[in-house]
Length: 368
Image (cartoon, rainbow, N blue to C red; front, side, top):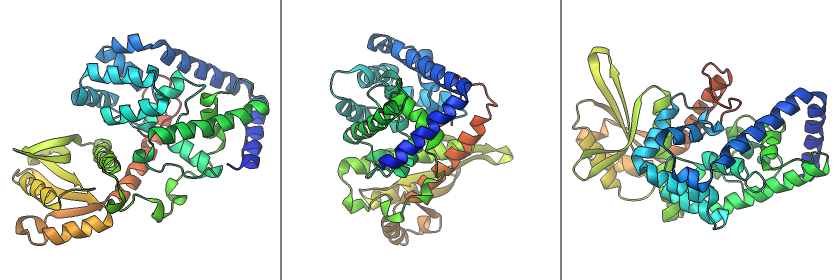
């Protein structure tokens, strides 16, 4: 970490707070309010959550402000796992006895639909002395400070990596305290990163192509699964933001499911459906068969294979011998899916900053 650069920005940040004591007081009160709210949810209370309680708990997160329909996110969590399982795993993540890295990894495997931004925000609000808030803005800030080996994608944020990031946050906290912010904690660090270290707005400007998702042969089975699920869910989010009804893991025939479906009803045309299959590892023949089966539905207007450039070329060659598919199949590199998701997330973030729709704790927005 570039300590000189960090200290220079901390001094500038503290100077601005002294010049605007009202902003300082508002920020301090907001931090206190958020921490108090999440700390009130003990493990016992989380176990007893109703669906309405879970919605309130999750909808207050900054990571949710990008969603116009927050109920969609919560309903999907419950539909995929059941309320009891979600609350059980959530209580263990926040208040379990094992080290945070173990709790993190267990939750990531157990619950789909809550990524590192949501998880880390809950942990930071509940344990502001120990747990860092990790999201796109934190990435930009720490990258600017010269911190190495930062996780670019959700699948890279393992429990071990999250614990390492929290230690980096504590180094920033230590410098903030030394320079005069005696009440600093890791939630204070997040405010500092947000206000002072957003020197590059676009992650694409600070990411080399070589740092993007690795080739499939370099993936472990676990990382391949996480990439698959991350891209599947981001495809659903993109469709949702574009106004489609979106579902994941949709059955198209006996024994066959496709990863993501976008659906809309358009005037007299009736239903229009687009089908996406994500390929990280596994059988290309299975992908092609699933897409072929989906085309049996007359409402399906397009089928899309999503993978890296190498895999897409293999899929293209396989599909060339399938007359009913080759002229209808589209190809989407999943690094481009990531960029589209980030761009749309930024658009939603900007719109939500206008405060057109009242939100609890409304101040910032981050991707899930």
